[in-house]
Length: 114
Image (cartoon, rainbow, N blue to C red; front, top):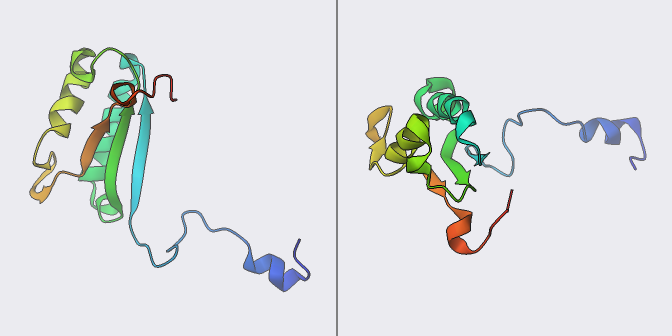
């Protein structure tokens, strides 16, 4: 508990913080299970990696796919996201390395991890 108002003011949060421990970039993690929501996830990933306001701050984007059905077999957006994840370059800026990846917890023995 803060001892004074000044100490309380020192603990106020800013969202998003300007920097935390000299870190200027961050990772974005999407948790996914349902193929019917992948269209929205696709749009957010496109924004994070393709829009200049975000791409300067975002170090990587990770989709944690926790569905037993493979992502590439989960409709047109699942196939698209899978295709983006296996590229060498950023799907929106061919001059940059790809910063999007998919993690499959079920393949690592972590079922029902959402």
